[in-house]
Amino acid sequence: MSADDANRRWTQSMPEAYERHLVPVFFRPFAADLATRAAALRPHTVLELAAGTGALTSALLTEMPTASVVATDLNEAMVTAGSAREPRADWRQADAQKLPFQHDGFDLVLCQFGVMFFPDRPGAYAEVRRVLAPRGRFLFSGWGPLASHGFGAAFQAALEQAMPDTAPPFLKHVPHGYSDPAVVAADLAAAGLTLAGSEEVTLKGVAESAASVATGLLTGTPVSTALQAREDAQALHTAITRKMTDRLGAGPVTAPMTATVYLAQRQA
Image 1 (spheres, helix red, strand yellow):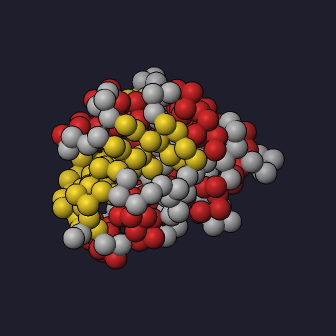
Image 2: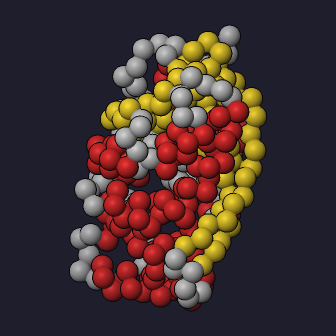
Image 3: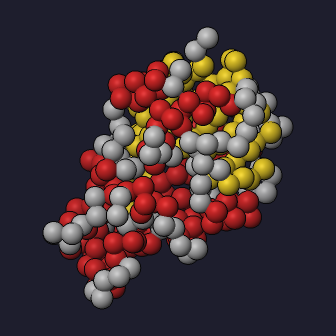
């Protein structure tokens, strides 16, 4: 199964695990930072791509309560969960590579940790350019290399120890596989967007336990598809949790996480 196929095979339970175990640790800290940057651009009409369960959406509406925010996600279960958690936004199911919006309709398009999942990134960026107003901006973030994410690196190490020949490479190849700003700039240019700036940001994530992070990554991401059909799935879950706890410690745990924030604009 390709990484894209795995990503699309969400179950109805995944958004709950994602929201419960991953959003507070991985996404909410960066959402606050990205929302502050978005507010400084003073947009009136905002489109969010790959909104998930609405961590950034809520932060945006807190920073910009008068802005019109349309939040989208490819996955219907995420849209359902997100609209229930953040009803102030207009939620739509949408494919970033074929956006159901008119030309020149948004001052700002945002995407937090979603561009890595787009199978055709220049194609998706071309859609962003199409829906942006002439002076519109595209503000988005991507994770750094896996080694720069304390929780992700610990999880992948535990996964590879527990499954030495069959460990899913999802984290390395997808969330953390698009971390070179030069590659990002080239993809943007191919779509008619200019990279106006990029900044590396390192924040601390705080989790209630290593076990909580392990559960989130094992059940709230496409990694779950590699375990679902295995008879030893529960034993693997236990082993991975134990190895992560050995590495990160018992009780509440903290780890650094690095991302890059990009700001692009429409070329004339």
